[in-house]
Length: 246
Image (cartoon, rainbow, N blue to C red):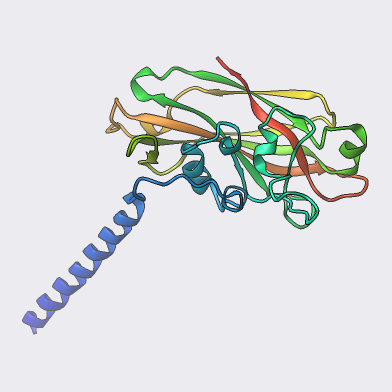
C-alpha cells in the first residue's frame, strides 16, 4: 500500500511541476523578431494594449505607423483608410480618426507611440499631449458628429531591444505606468494634456532588472463619455499627438 501511495504522490508532483512550467512558459515566452505589419485592417482593429504596443514598436512610416486603434469607420464611397487611426496623427485638422463601433464608440481606444528610453539614462519626463476634439475641418462637421467629453489616458511601458537589424522586439509583459482621467472641452481648439512619467515602474517592482535594458512607452486613450452629435453617432478626434517632451 505504501508503495502505491509513493507512486501516486510522485505522479501528482510531476503534474504540478508540469503545470507550473507551462504557466511560466506562457508568461515569459515572446514571439520571434516581428515582421513589419502595415495592413490598415490590423493596425485599425487591435484587440488590446499588448497588440498595440507590438505594432507601434516597429514602424516604417513615421506618421501612418505611429498610431493604432481598436476600430475605425469604413464608408463604401471613400478610401478604406479615410478615417484610419493615423489621421489623428497627420497634423491636418481636416482629417480625423473616426471610431467604427456601432453606437457612440464608448470604450473604443486609440494608441500612440511615445518614446523609447535606456534604463541607465532615464530621467523623469513631462509629456505634453495635445488633442483637437471632434471632426474639426469645419463647424458643421464638428457639430454633426460626436466629440469626446471624458476619456482615460493610460501610459504603458515594456522592455524592448533590437532584433534583426531594423526591427525591435518586446521582452517583458506590459506594465501600467500611470492612469489619468481627462475632461475635454467641446471646442475645435487645441487642448493640452500634460502627463508626467516619473519612473520606470518595471524597475521599481523588480530589483533584478538589467540596468542596460531599454523601455518603450505608449499612450492609450479610451473614450468614456461624449458630446452628442446632431446627426451622427460616430465619435471623432482630429488630432491626438505629442507637442513636446521635457
